[in-house]
View (cartoon, rainbow over the protein chains, first blue to last red):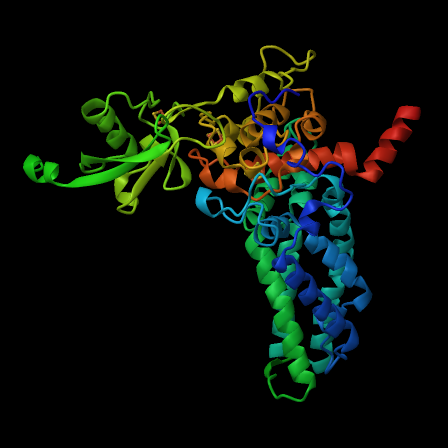
Length: 244
Length: 248
Ligand code: SF4
Ligand code: SF4
Ligand code: FES
């Protein structure tokens, strides 16, 4: 393709890292990236090294059904379009902001975008399928919490809110949107086209809140984890709302 | 009727980029109610310095000619009211394109890119006259609102900072409007991904932020085309299923 008058002279070789196996984004001295990696490392270490045992029938979502699914969930989030936007902006600063004076992006910095190694972000849909498969365990855990205590408790409600947020986050995914109508150009030519289209519209509404849902569900995950840790350390922060 | 004297007493200073001196020059213009940046710039051209080069046509946010950078954000001059801006107003030409003179830039690369997009190719067997259901055109209607102001191309860091071989958001919108047309038979996502540099877009959504027509460029056009490109280029299961069907 011919891109016309774009002047590339000074940056001819440097504008993209075509020959780099490791993207420039990862090689630049970038304290934000280092901090991010350290934080993730610490969090993983703590989650694996100090597991929360089920207490009173409540299961910590990081261990539902087992901590071994954590890589899958992690990969799902890291390839999610919402977080992709966030780390490309706030960690890699490509660009930090849209305004011309505060972008922190420049011709001199190499840029890979979602090419080369970052093409792996395109596998998002597979992590989605995997995550949908483990979603039922979250519902099972609500059931277990209710059945164990024979009561609706604060902890069960918190688990339920978490599960609802995860569900909304999962099904507002862009890959799910493509799968359930985004890839269809002619609804009226298809079986049950009108219902498909309505489903697509509802999903699109959810999808327009995907970024908020992504963060809400992540923060909720962390909150539930801390709450259950506090509970298992003996803190009296749970109470019965309704006996069943 | 408003009191004309009191109106003409209020003045604002506007700083405009001049290409000859390669610097910003301050101009003081009378402020009127409901005034937009284009009014102020035209006032300068008419009454203060007639050599100021500007481009505009409709003053109604329809033609897309008055695109500029107002206080560091790409915007239409005719759609930006002075009363939404702070006291200091700075108007620059779009920085991603070659400057012609003052606020005028050469956006012709966009017409060139546009010509290279595979055209609409209708299904030959479709019954004529074409009948299209409303639910099948709804999605592409959004993309047809584009006024080709190229503000999205200007703000896109892939083009502006990195000069990479990426067609740019406006052209992905164009491709999506063709791809999602119910009668069109082509899938342009592979073309977009392989030749159009779609992978360079890192979905940071600045284009969506500046679009004066409120088109959800990233969500509804770019990500959709990226997912279609995954079908064609990256999805191993679909790749295998295509191989099997092909071999039969
Ligand atoms: S979302 Fe993509 S096309 Fe839009 S400004 Fe960002 S990088 Fe450019
Ligand atoms: S998509 Fe929006 S910002 Fe881009 S050229 Fe069209 S109207 Fe302008
Ligand atoms: S003058 Fe036509 S869009 Fe501003």
